[in-house]
Image (cartoon, rainbow, N blue to C red):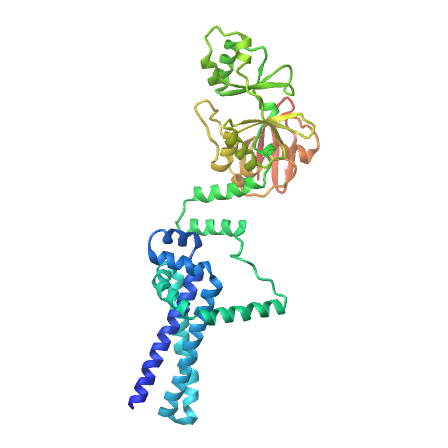
Length: 414
């Protein structure tokens, strides 16, 4: 082999290595998580260079494509000259076509891109410096090609999104599920993410304590009456009413009573009442949580469109929807769903439909209700009696106990 052919062979090898370098760089820089880039930028200089490359993705991509295409074309030209000299004009171009295509695919595309896809962070940091320098050298060319490219898009009326593509709720849910399956996050963390998105679509009436379950105090108040209520319920705040729940005078925080002497009068206690915060029943749960955080008093009275009291909502109600039921030493320990044999459960009427679905593994109809009792009454269209029975989408519901006009307990069978 002549000296010129050895030079051709060396140039060809450099071009193939460079092609792999640019192909892998493109995959790594595009695939790395943006939030991780911000962390890397705060850590060292390579991270800052990587962040700068991602700040102008059009220029970076143009640089990589220009460089990659240049070395591939150069490799094809050099290989053609080399193999024409070695195999003649008849066979040389054919050998180059098949041999060089395979080499570039394996060593210039598939191999480097696979490596970059599996290790995007390390690969990106490795190439950030060289690509940053190359971007400055090729800036006139990348700017010109970007300008021409955008002109063609405008000519054909193709709209370009400014900035990064929006990340959807489904994207985040899928990423959380993937992270759970790979062991990067716990199942409980993934459930909190799902619950957070579910809360964004739910109204406060779906998580509130309904009016029939409200525990209130009737004015005028006495120390003994408040003490009895605290002892029997364990609650720390109570709505104070005049005659009915629709006439709420204020909210009493039990800890405020500690500032009063034991012989405090009803008037003294009345002065401790805080004005009630009224919340429309259609208000989104997350919006209510933000209001409670700003007011630093996590207690609100939920009202309907006519101003009638529908129930109360507390910070605990909202947080329980995110992380599950938060029970303290005063809460009843009876679970809302009790297994009663194969394919059979005894269920509290206030149990959320979503919770029952998760337990029985079946989907139930949706409507203007959130509890199993609401589902039963929506299907029957009336206040049921004990023993009433319906079948909904293959799930049998039987009323076991009524508490006045409220379904207290049901039997569920599949």
